[in-house]
Amino acid sequence: MGNLVTEKVVSTFTGSGGNWTFNGSAQYKNNRARLTPEQSDSEGNIKWRGQLSEKVWRAEYRVDIENNYTGSAEEIVVLFYHDNAGSSWQPQNGYYLSFDHNDNEVRLVRRDDGVDRETYTQSLDISGDAANEQHNIRVSFDYGSVTAYFNSKKVFEQELDTVDYSGDGFGFGARTTTDASAQFVDDIRLISLTDRNIKRAEDEWDNSGIAFGKSTNTHQLVESLASMLDRSDKTLYDVKRSKHIDTASGSDLDRFGELVQLDRKSEESDDKYRARLKLQFRVGNIGTTFDAFSKFAAVLLETNIDNITFNSNFELNPATFDVSAELEVFNKASISRLETAEFLSEAVPAGHNVRAFEIGSFRLKSSGDSDDQDKGLTGDGTSTGGTLTREIVGHNVRAFEIGSFRLKSIGDRDDRDEGLAGDGTSTRGTLARGSQ
Image 1 (spheres, rainbow, N blue to C red):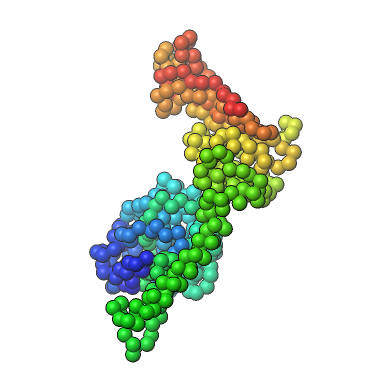
Image 2: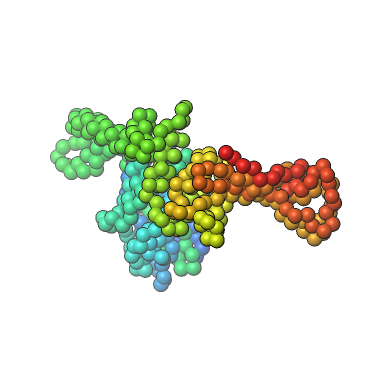
C-alpha cells in the first residue's frame, strides 16, 4: 500500500501495524486495505493512528471495487474529524464523504451522536458493476470548503457553514447491503499545508542520475527553497483566514460586524460573536418562503429541522408562524433565547409574526396509575417537576417554552401542596414563564 504523508510523518502501510488500525470486516489483503469482502451486510473501517489537527489538507487515494457476481454495493467513505467509528463504516460523531456506487452519488454527511445532522448530495455515475474497477479520488478541505475530484474530474463542492473540529480522527470506511462488492482503498496520501512543497518535490523528482535522499546536498538545497514557499503559503493562508468569517478573529472579525451593522457585545468572545454574525448574514439573504424560514430556524437553533415543529395560523392578524422545540434544543444553541426571538423576528416574511415555544413534558395520567399525594400530576420519565409553556418575548415575536403540566385523570388524588406536577416528578411543575 502507498504512503501516508501528513505534516512531517511518512508512514508506509504494512498490515494492521504501523499507523493504521483495522476495525469490523476490514483486513489487510493483497497489499491493500480491504474494507469489505464480497459478502452481504458487511462493514468496516481503517483508522489512522495520528491526529488530524490541520484545517487545510488534501487526501489522495485509490478505491478498487471488485465483483465476481452481478450487482454492486454499496459505498466507500473517507472519514475525517471524527471521534470513533468502532467496527462500523461511519462515525458516531464527525464527518464522512461517501462515494456510493449503489445509488451513484457523492454524499457529505455530518453526524452527531449517531444521527445524520447535515447531508449534501451530488449525483455521480460510479459504475461499480465491472469485475474490477479502479478510481482515483482527491478530497480537499480548506477551512470548511470541501471539494472532491473523481478520476481527475471535479464532482463535488460544498461550503460548510460551521465545522466541528472536536474530533481528530481520519480514515476510511465501507459497507455492503444485499448486493456486495469487495471494496479496497490503496495509495493513501494525506497532505497538509506543512511541508507540502518539499513533499511535492520528492514525489516529482525523476532525475535518476542525481541522488535525492534526505541526507544529500541536493535534498537539503531543495528543502531550503521549499521551506521559503511553505512560509509564503502560510502567509497567504493567514490572509485568507482573516478574510473568512469562520477563521477571522479579533479586529478582523469586528470588520465583518461593520458590514452588517452588528457590534460585538462587551466581553463577547470571538466564537459567540461569530455565531451571531453568521446568523445576521443569513437574515439578509433569507428567502420569503416558509421553507426558507424553517431552514433558517434550524440553523439558528443548531439542530436538525426534524427537531422543530412548525405550525401556521393565518386566521390571526397578522398571520403567525409557531416554532416549537424541546428545552434541550434551546439550551444547546449558541445564542440566548432573547437573541433567538430577535433573529426569528428579523427572518420571518414581511407582514407576519412568529411565536417560538419550548416544549414541556407533562402528560395525562394513564389508566391504572395510582394516586400519589407527593407527586400529583407528573411528566414521563422525570423525577422532578416539569414546566409549562414559557414565552420568550423579543421584537415582534413571542417565543414560548412549552411546559410539562397535564390534566388530572380520573382517580388522581387532589393535592393542595403539590398541585399539578410533571410526569415522574416528585415536586410541582411550573407554569408558563415570560422572558423579556
